[in-house]
Image (cartoon, rainbow, N blue to C red):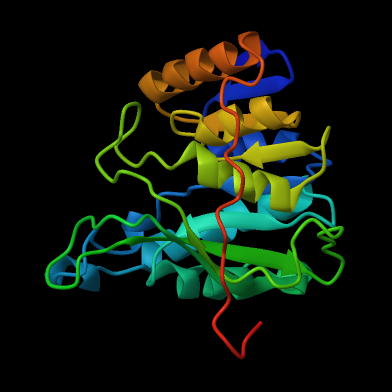
Length: 247
């Protein structure tokens, strides 16, 4: 296992199931697990793939993630319409001790640009909000915040990873999940988008990635973000309007 220390970031090249067992006192989790294992990447015929393996893997991950997290820690995990339910099922199957955490909401990032799928091409990135009885958002999320976040993200803008997410939206999740100086974990780091957001927002970061190529890209991106200070300045939050009558 390779470990890199870059400023306030600690990055592990290795299997998350092995690394998670060595961690503790994580304040928040913002991660993009490989949810396409539960089915195809579109809404076509491949969407019927079996989620059994993915659920079994998640149960193992969630047991270790729970032990590594503070009881107050929220988890924000990217998913799709299919895997939000798999997350909930895996939480239930991870053991009696774990029953205090569950999926309480699903957020949607409206990229304002269509992606894959036919018919009804996908325009949303989904994020499952997982919390427990002691999870505390500390007033970081406005009470009128809707569960749809609208902000343009060019779907084909995958400069570093084929499942890359918006740094801007990742920054919102980090801000909602944690305070300045907190420890944020991404156990499926990919090319380091969550780590870049943390570097820009004054959070400590722990990242785990099993693919050497993606790990090296993440190291470079996070090092660049820390060297340049606020390399990415989050835009002022675009106005998020709640549906009338639901505010």
